[in-house]
Length: 157
Image (cartoon, rainbow, N blue to C red; front, side, top):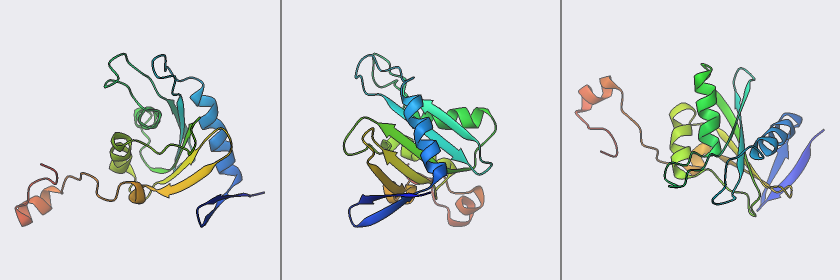
């Protein structure tokens, strides 16, 4: 069974697997530690192996030390030895649904440039993006071979 959701002129087809991931992201959102902003976000990260890693944002009174739900999910996966990501669901109580912040986009791009990013809110609105669409020019380290061949320095430095 599939459900369709409109986003502009595009049509998003939501699979049963995505519905399950959305439920996990929304449930994880409730575990967020957000006493300052009250802005709770949950994420569910799907890997090529079929495993799902979740994360909720964790705030700090300095705000700058806050860790977003998306990065918590990535860190959970990495700590379990899994780094082949194919899709992330981000859930928050915002309209329109929020997309990952710049820091999260950069961290995700380290592992999966072709990642599918599905952003949802609690009212059923669903937006779908590719990570390349959200972060067209990530900071990338050139390979050692490329640096020696071209003499170029790291992009962004």
